[in-house]
Every structure is written in C-alpha cells, then in structure tokens.
Image 1 (cartoon, chains in turn cyan, orange):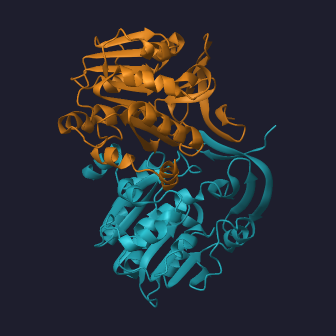
Image 2 (tube, one colour):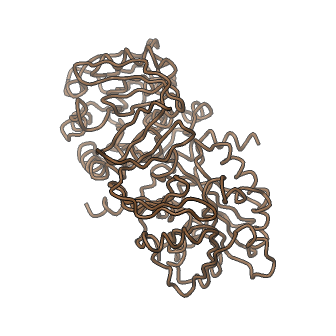
Image 3 (cartoon, rainbow over the protein chains, first blue to last red):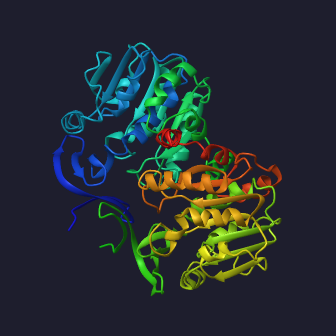
Length: 280
Length: 280
C-alpha cells in the first residue's frame, strides 16, 4: 500500500506523490509548511498542502524564473527576489559573476529554515556573501523609497491566496516599477494559463499597465496544477529576446532545460491567450 | 465526498479527476476501455486505466500532432492516421481542403464506438466522405506494399505497452518511411521527455535512422504523465519550420493553442535533451 500526499484543486483535480516519509510539518503565523520524501521526485516542499517544489523538477521552475531576465537585462548588479524561500531562485541568480548584491525578501522564516534543513540540494547558495536574506513582507519592501534601485526584480511567490495575495495587485507592481533601475526587468510567476486562465490574463494586463510592457512566457512544471505554467517578463524598454550572448554562454551548459532556443521559443503565446490579449 | 478516478504511474505518481459518473466500461480483445464524466475536464477516455483524452484538454494534443506536419508538408492529399480512435486527430486533419483522402487505422473497434457514442464533441468528422476508417493493425498496414504512398503519416498510438508496443520499433518506422511519398512527413507522439526520457530519446534516434531526420517538439498535455509531452517530426528532406503560409492562415484563427509562433517555438529542445542527443 502506498501512502499518498495529494494537492487537490477545487475538489476536482488531484496530483499525488507516494511518500516514504514526512520530514517536517510546522505551522507558522502565515501558513502550514511541510517537507515530504517522495518515491518519484525526491524531497518536496508543500505550503498549505499545495506542492511548491521538489528536487526532481525544481529546475524547470527556477531556471525559467531567472534566466530569461538575467540573460537580457542590460545591468544585473542588484537583484531583488520576493518570496523564493526554498533558495532555488537565488541559487540561479548567483551563478552570474556580474550579480553584486541580492536582496531576498521572504515573509515566512519557517519556509527558509525548513528548506535549509531538508532541501539542501535546492538552496546551495545560502552562504554566498552577495546574498542578504530578509524575513519581511515583500509588499512593504517595494513600497520603501530609501533603497537603491534594482536592475532585476523576481517575484517568486505562491498563489493568490494567503500571504501572497497582495503580490497580484496593481499597486504592488507599480511599486516594483518604481524600484527598478532605468533599464530594469521584472519577472513574476504567473500561474497556469489553463486552470488559472483569468488570473493569468489579468496579471499580463495589470503588469503591462504598471511596468510598460508585459510578455508572458510558458513552460512545464510537473508539480503545479495542469503541469503547464507561466511567467511574465516586464520592462519599460528591454526586449525579452535580446539575449546578451556572453551571459548565456556562461550559464547555458550547466542548465537542465534553459538554453537559447528555449528562451526564444517560450514567449510563443498559445492561440487562446493571444486572441484574448488582442481583444483586451 | 468526491469519487476519484486516478491514473497511477509506477505506484509513485497519480493524477486524478473527480467524476460525476461512469458512462462506459468495456473489455475488448485488446484492452479495457472506459469513458467517465469528470467535474473538471468534461468527458474523458481511459484505456487500461490510463487517461487518453478529455473534452477539456484534447486540443492541446490533437492540434500538436496534426498542424506542424500539415502546415509544412509540400503535399497533404493522402494522409494515414494510425491509432487515433477518439477521432480528434482526423478531425484536425480534415480541416484542410487540400486533404483528399485519410486512412485511419485503429486496432480496437471498441475505442471508436465508445468515442462516437460518448465523445461526440471530439470526433466531429466521422462522416466526412474523405475519411476511411479501418479496424486493423497499424503494424500490418504499413507493411503493405499494395497501397499508394502517403504524404503524411501520423502515429497517434498509446504508450509502449499493450497493443501499441510495436509502434515503438525501428521496423515499424522503416515501413512507415517506405509508405511515405517523396517529400512526405511522419509525426508520432513521443511520450514525456521527463518521465519517459529514455524512451523519448530512443524514439528520436530510431526514427532519425529510419526516416532520415527526426525533430522532437514539445508542449503541455494536462492529462498525461508529468503534463510535459512531446512529438517527433520526421522527414527525409522537409524542414519542420518551413511553414506554408496559406495553409497556416486558413486554420490558425480557429485553433485553441496552435499558431505560427507556437509552431516555431515548440521545436526548442530542453537542454538535457539537446545534450543527450549530441552525445549519441
């Protein structure tokens, strides 16, 4: 008999992994945090019983939230990561020697601590001296006017429920835009273009208004609802396909999925999305 | 309480849909065939308890197995579909006025009958006079030397277990190649590049040897293991990105996901696949 750990979507769809053991369950002031050891995907993190990341498929997500921005933004010296408590996003960011300073702003210390203890293969850059981890509210952080600008902002939050809800509002993106340097780039995860289609479309429109231009891009993430996932690349002036060759050459060989062709291909919009955006 | 219908992958991963009712269960001489009505995805077909297609996501699969070939092959007058008993593939093929004759060779009459009765929204072209349905073994069909050549062959089979096993052998693809017209194109579904990675890589190499050139391409299919799916485009001489504009213009507007950008983007190989193919 297998012991199953399932994410259930609206009582209609479930995605389950059989587990060897539960490594951690805790309740922070924000949410339930769990780490399980699965038969198929190694160790995996859940928040409020939703799959967040696993050792097996984490690069599908982390490479895609990081490299399209980091391979195109004219400057990448100062980077802000909002969320990302498992450490995978900052790990990918810190692969670039041109990155000088990363502020990671995660609201829930328990996510960071559980990830450090139980998912060390994902967060391999915690000790990088360029990284400053702040346990703080990302909404308040981007409202601060006392900070130097960021060249890249990556929003690695969870779904628009619980503490991440504010990460889906126009005020938040306007504040992000105000924190970006002149040729800065913002990327956020943007939900499933199928199961969260209206949220996804709203995000594209909202971020386009707040930042200037918003380009959705697409790729698979096995753990997430529908398996089809998306991100949004936003900038006032940087074109998302203008790859800086030297940076790409430096990181491409050691990527699991990311490479030049995938970067250029992932911005293709499924026809139903393209048509909906033309109408709006 | 929900009643769940799950596909279980190696006792380690399951993907389940809550069901309103079971519409059909039958045992043919080849396999178990079921149709269920699901809360999330409308009606869905299972073979041997594996999800085959659903009303909700079927276009993700059927548009991708058909249009890359049909928008690039120099001639598309004669088309062979092997498998495809739900009718979705031939429906997409028959959208092109230039298609004059389609042979659909499905081994299991029960799949066709159950689909006709319970999935009429998927198989909308059964009565097209250009379509000839043959209940026969695809392996034997492509070994026949008495048939006119085909401009396009689409292999819409299930996984390499049960009656579809032979659809993954080099002899089969060599026979397909022999049945193709001079500038013919073959496309086959090619499993998950993640969960069936070695099968996927073997198929690319095998089909490349048998047909000439094999180009994998990628897209999401919600119902299938990992959600990340693949197909292979094979030809002795046709380049998979040389789109014939008039054909694309004719079908694009009414596609759910397929369009020019998706066609050009879907051939991007994830880096781990590209590296494995370079080594082989």
